[in-house]
Image (cartoon, rainbow, N blue to C red; front, side, top):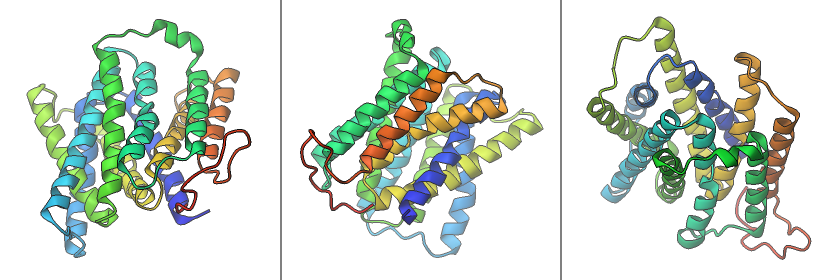
Length: 297
């Protein structure tokens, strides 16, 4: 297994912890997202500056990096609103349609176009995710503001993946993650202030959870995922991130006592199979020839 793939796997494990911490509900959603970014930025900024790696080639790249941070913050904010106004399941499922938007965007805007195997694997992975949450779930969908926000979250995330892939052609991972994380924190601080969410008053366990979110779910996770995004297809990274649904289900079963059914296990297996197909470079019989198969990892 190559280094980018190892980084991707470990990064997915790190972000899979996040929903479990959020379910503990020690702090409101948007302020939790702010501290996740702020704690990571507080560690990243001095390290990057003192190590002499805070180098950006041009004002254009700097502004695009800041924009990446703002878009990622917007993704987290509308995702939290969608959860608060509907259910975590609905919001997460609709947000995880992002690989489709990434594939469409990559087709039009990136040099490396999605392969046939990407579309096959994405379709199978989404089917697996649907199986994981249950087909009956779709009969209860409410096409309201929360639905729109959940879809918007997936679009934001897709734009972030595509734009960050473009920027990472020109800049190293460390300064990119540092600047984008800091801009996310600033954006979320402003948003939290205007919607009246508290910046203090949490329990000791609440503060501990916020630190874990910042260090593990943001700092470690996105340094690793940023490295993977720089060296892999954006489409592959986006589909692989669907794997966090499987890991989160396992962690929820182990640590907070959520039930795991045979259907959920079957859905997880199908989802992982779909992800594996996106990494398969040879053409699948009956589906034609893959183009651009020379892409690294």
